[in-house]
Image 1 (tube, rainbow over the protein chains, first blue to last red):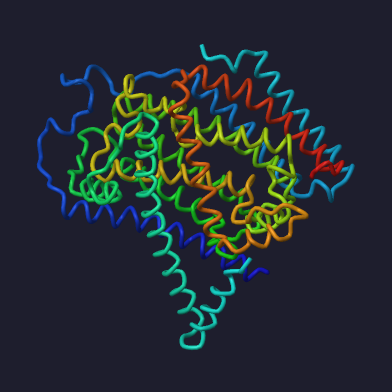
Image 2: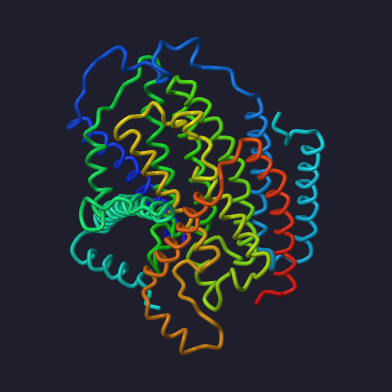
Length: 122
Length: 358
């Protein structure tokens, strides 16, 4: 059984290397056959034709971070649901009560975020 | 159903007769790598043509029809054309991250691609946590998109990347929860065992109401995950030119294009796996003659047919619904899909525990 898992890790590594090889090979071919010339205008940020005004690293809404943090909490909670979901029929009542408490915490978290207005895009 | 793992294990023992084990494993890994690469490229080219043809049909146009018969070679020609275009280097961007971002995007889709059940015994990676591994690796793609937008040193790409990041992480939640719902009924996370569990009836039929709700949520979340219309606001061309890949040119842009179409295939493949039995033929309990006839169609054909049919539905979405605003998008996810999903999970547990499955 352990040997099988090692084989799977090797295969996952193979897939990863395949991805790297695909990008590297395509880039190599493109660099060999594509033209290239230098022009200081070419490397400027694409905007509207005239030189860029101000910093390119513009300010952006903090709302994006808020949703990222909310995602982090809920996603980690979802991860904890997986091991239980596999064994839902085998764990019986004990497992069900434990996960019910945990599930209530998730729902309470969502209700709290909702009431606090964290889900509004302002 | 013929089990194709017989063929692969025969090949392994055939190789062992001539060369030592480490060499055999290396050779097999090399062959798998080449196979994945070819399949990846061919599927992406097919999907690009498929989408263009379907879009053309929706708009009463002909679509590409000049290169090759019925335009079949159009995307091959496009690939060569994109290879001979110049790769522009930026003056101010972060060059290392700019080069790294396409690698991450392609690696994420390639790893997810390798988990899909192609046929009976044809899974490349057969982890016991297969579907979980698939969700985990496909989230690396968000990282690539955020890095691409940030390292390009451009306002459009920055805003495009942030929108894309917020959208993809939000809908990943729905995707994860609908997968949990289906794991409850399957009782396993191994992709092969999920297929085997649907031997008598596909989950969308045996799980009836909760499975159908999970399927609808999964398709919506999958469309948003792949940044396709109506959720294509990270690349809303009237506001952000091309979104996070504005500064990429030539084959650099091609990688994002490839990954986008492959992600479309992966999402439809996972939907086919979780709801329509993966490579499992259509079986109806009690109709043995019908089931036997269905078994004659090879498992690979079943899987590809289901995946392409579901992709067609996702492409159809694009021409049916107008593009959402970012606040509508986040409201849809957090105020509708997430609560419905949590309720649906409870419903599925009740259905499974009281044996109400068909």
